[in-house]
Image (cartoon, rainbow, N blue to C red; front, side, top):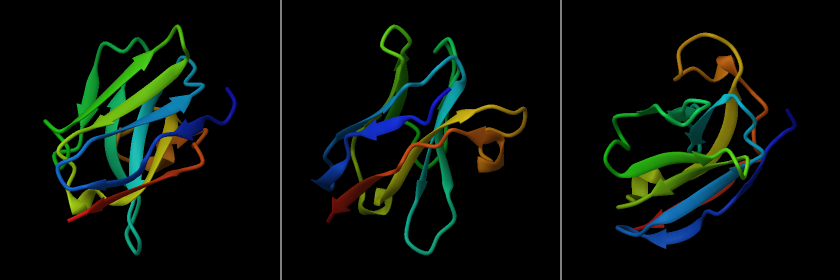
Length: 120
C-alpha cells in the first residue's frame, strides 16, 4: 500500500455538491475524516474493502455517500447539500487495525488532505 493521492474539493455555496477521490485504495476498509481549524480530526465515513458496507457520522448521514471502484483502485466521497459547517480539510485513509471506525489511530496511509470550503 502506498500513500493515496486525493483530488476534488474546492469552494462551493451552501446547498451545493462536491466529489472527492482517493487513489490508490488497495484492499483495506477506507475512511474519510475531516479537520476544521482549531478542531480535532473528525470521522466522516467508512466503506468496507468489498464496498458492501458503509458507515457514516450522524452529521453527514443522508447527505454524503462513500463508494469505491476496486477496478480503478479508487474511493469516492460524494457530498451533497453542503453546509458551512462542512468546511474543513478532508482526508482519506486506510483502516489497517481493528478498532473503532471513528478513531484515527486505527488508520494508516493518509492522503495529503483536500480543502473543502462551503460559503453561506
